Length: 479
Image 1 (cartoon, rainbow, N blue to C red):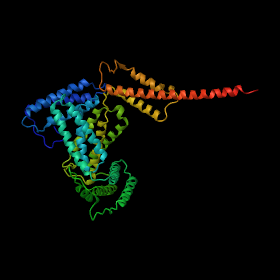
Image 2 (image 1 turned 90 degrees about the vertical axis):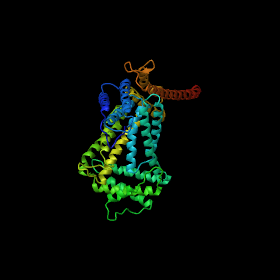
Image 3 (image 1 turned 180 degrees about the vertical axis):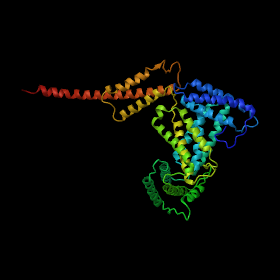
Image 4 (image 1 turned 120 degrees about the vertical axis):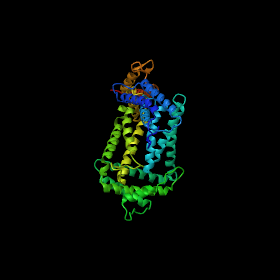
């Protein structure tokens, strides 16, 4: 099974029953994903997962002599595993190996796009590196409890991601701290220029302000002004891209990396000003589709904690995958098979990369709590933030001021049955995380109450110390 095989083999008649069965399973997963009338039950997901694994084992038995074959069975299996992976996140089983599948698929595409774009921040790579370590641990833990076929596949995909990650890390290894600061500024400017290029109204003034920043950096680095020598800005930009050498073990000169990125920033600003936010009409439909996906994913930032069901990401993943897979040798082609110009290519690639980055962000920030417990968990997160803010601002003057928080915490605590948060007769995943967060909130409230009581006692002692002096003065006075 792979994400986007170039060639599909014809279907072996022996595999037809497997295809028929996994199509039914995929439909069941899709129905479960769309059902918002109740929360997703762990057992429903585990049952469907077991059915998929059963079909994988049958498939591997048939393909003993052709393990690398790819056909429609693999495409549908990939759909099933993507959905099951997101369901494992939805039910709060984030630390289990099946939950890793969707994350790794997204990271592989993201790394490929970062390599293709030729610019990225060290922080981008650090985040991915850290999560690859975490996902590797999940696969290691899962070897005794999950299908070895799935574990082998997951480990192979992690290895592919690590290989690409090393290439990207090596390309930045010769940047000293001072040059790294300039490099990060240039990456930020280039990303900002690309964002400007995809706005509904092209911000000419803002782009020119970025140009001014680039001129200042150019002067600070004592770089010469970019000249075209009779070539277009797009031609020169392509030459700069071609000079990139992102290969494992090859560390480019730090000064060259920064100078090359500066030239790309200046050329890109020139190109998008010339295009004025207009993309080649041959690719307008693809552009509109990608902008819509990017904007929808962006808007999820506002409501993610309260309303995002991780399986919602599946439809976005699949739309993006189909667009990405439609490229030929990395090029977006029109209806007649002709490639897009550089402006359209880089603009569409930016939108693809940005959208996958959002999906990655939502997957890695998924809480290890079932959606059945998320309302309680999110309320506790909000209470914790409020209590921490109260503590940072100096606490409260009286324990009475903590009554609203205490009442809410007690009402949540009273929802437990035999020490667990139940939904009907089910015990949803994530009990430990919710109970630990509840305990943190109680501890914060307790500390604030103690601080307030100590403050009141100190004020009372101070008043008592001053009272005898007043009494003596009063007794010694004469009418």
